[in-house]
Image (tube, rainbow, N blue to C red; front, side, top):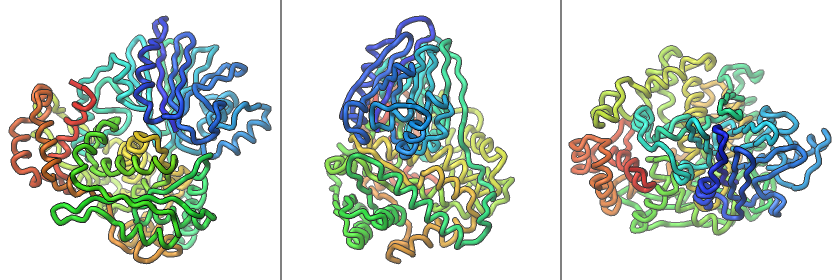
Length: 593
């Protein structure tokens, strides 16, 4: 896993190499093991390398194959690169490295932009055709690896993080009111292609963008499960359990491909515990596992060590446990927010950031359980939505999931930042109306997995781990597992309070205390309950000259939040003050005025 950057000129000029250097410098935490640059004609590329596969300099990037006339930068991991390499060698290609990046280059030479359909993994890449000047950007099916772009009439720049684009300069940093509406509706989530900044966009998941020399481009979405009952497994629970168990085994095995040791982030929940159990089944011994907890605050526990300890003992892992005291949180908050490509309100971002710092001292690659709740319907609001008729899916979703109504949201904002229409409901309505998806739950899971999840929690895990040069792999987002789960009857996923079919799999390999425990989250009580050091930082940010000058939120509204910091909650119980402050702290941290 790495960080990439680049510039493409459309006006006949040469790329700004200094700007590409600045962007590449910002990406150093994503790739602390190497640095490279390349320029030819109207294109310049930069790269920071994290050595995971082929640790030699033969795997360095940008990678050029002069015989094929191609140069590429790549971020992520192609798990089936060895199989693809064998196939490409059979087609006459010869390799100079053992890296998955070179497999991408040769695959592009063989199949063109459609090569992306042969790749199994998480990735974002840019390929330059020397002779045509064409540049092709691509992102993996589930959007696990990020790819940001900014464009005007003269040029396009791209990078693995939004702050890297800011370092290049020339970005319109005014706020996008529609994105702000989404941020305040969906717990800080802004789905592709938008970001909170007008001048920055994201390549959507499962998308290839072909950019011609004159600046015109076309996007192609190359993958989207239908969420219909097309499987020959029918409604038989036993057959579905066996099929999903096998798919998860494959997903976990794929994610052990590395030339460095692989560990697991072990929360003690069903998802991460299953990963440990399946690795043990596949013969892993002495597996490094990692858990983190926080001091209790206001009577709320901040750790789940009793569960992670149970799994660590059961499978004899090399277990590492970290307890964080509340007095470390203010500085930790600053560091976590600085690592965010976009503002996020989930306070477990702080936990992931601190955990990643410790884990990166032990291993370079970890597996984690992110995505299981969206893919297999684990959240408590899904049954309410599932009860609605298919035609009413959009209304059911808004009722169950939105933080607040359009009217309530508009009242929070100063007029210059409000939109007249209910932009978030419009987004949901458009997605729900797309053909396919047999039921209201199918339509909801399709939107959650493919539109919202890539920008939370997937982005959160990527940003926080890569801030420390740590590669996080997510077995539950294996695209073949997602395809299978999309076809699975909703009642099998909703059973037993959610993820029923996964719980049945868990009962075959895990202690019952793990499978039947109440659903847990990564708690950070000091943030959720606005402990004094956290509240002090929030107050400082919201009363700073920059905040007053920017004027996003109505001053009377902010004053009410600060007067009663723990009273005002979203419909799902999140702290409204933290949601408001997170945006302002992020803007200030990244020098956006």
